[in-house]
Image (cartoon, rainbow, N blue to C red):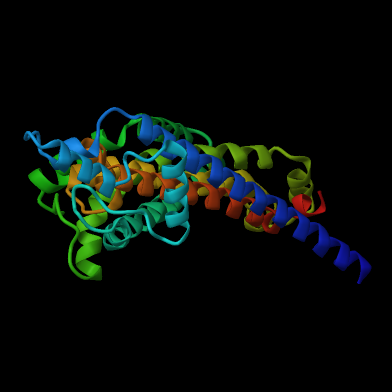
Length: 321
């Protein structure tokens, strides 16, 4: 009982430290995001006037509505206070609440990220395991293929997939979100593949390296010398011990998909938060840019925290440490 209580106490302290670090990270990131947007050239008032000459009174009213004349620190504190309660202000270009805009577009982005994440995990683990367990021609083919995939930008993959599977073969649509679950899967297959290509190659290489490292360890040779079946050796001693670095890379990669969606959603004409971010940067829609960027930072920080909590469950050595 004493040992269990001690372990629970240590885990509670570890979780408290990680949560405190998460809060500090979000606070620093929010200040950096707000400062970067605040210091960026341009003014929302110039977009609202559409280049037309406006009276000083009209310009002053616009700046007052969006609190553009308040001191920087006051603007930041107002924004943080609203963000904590889910109020990110009002969009300049759409003239509606930013929170409503995000909620309307978030399902498309989440579906795309989930679809791409599934492709990344399945393709990365299978290809990496095959390369590690089948040295020779198959290993070289996987290394070359994943090298090409890792070096291919998402927009290049998007153009190539649209040209082949939409224009020439006509198998998949090139634009639109789709209606209903089945139609949405059909519409988002090419965007998900374009989004997953680079990250799947990266995960395959990490899986291969991690499994090769475990295959060379002494305890694997001992298990084989004792007559343990090869499938059991791979499952219990190689794959299980390889999951630490694999899970770390997987968590970081899936969180990073939110950033890459801006390119893919724009290429395929999807109405997600990535495309919203691109259009908002173009017209200096500061509230939307701040909200989307903050959301990406939150997802990154939460993914890192989740990986830190999952790894001790995967690897008992980390629990003892």
